[in-house]
Length: 280
Image (spheres, rainbow, N blue to C red):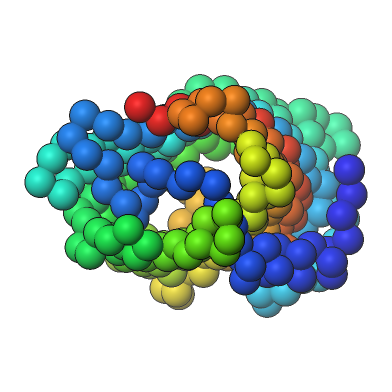
């Protein structure tokens, strides 16, 4: 499964610019009513044998002497708790393997976890925005090779906005989340943003598009070559396309393909994502 790097960004942007979503409900920045919410469980299969350049944020990649493979288990959820508030979380575990010509290293277990609170600002039928404050808890071990976490607490305040519009029988949707991730121990800051959209192909099938961006600002970020806790330095632009099928109104299997498009001093790879979302 190989998609040319020059074609994927255009395809993802096309999906983001013209997006349709059938019966979109209970998702940030729309705050679910108390007792309602959404859980999405996924398995992510990642592989990389190339490297982005160390000195620039670039699309250029070169073969690397090591190969990185990851199987990640992830649960994303949100739970309405009333008065315009919602509990949100991302729970992660993984099995990692880093192979070199003469050795192979592996690790498995919990990664860093994320938990936060969202508050809805304007909650209208076709427009909503919200403020979310997340805490990233360093539960992933850093003593293993490869590592499962950063070993550092971080906070991430985000602004989220979403719009919906009817195009005939289809409901168009686009959403954006943007904000900094700040590591408490040294103030290293990443600017992070994610966009999601979709277009209804047929009654039950939805084509989705995603973009994720992260750029480390602080010059004192821990460098890959000098410290084991290198996840503070995370410069990446990742794009993806996927399909979601509504088995019922509230149960929807999903599958997606994601590729690292631009980066700096990290592995460049792709991953297949499969899972199911449940709205309640």
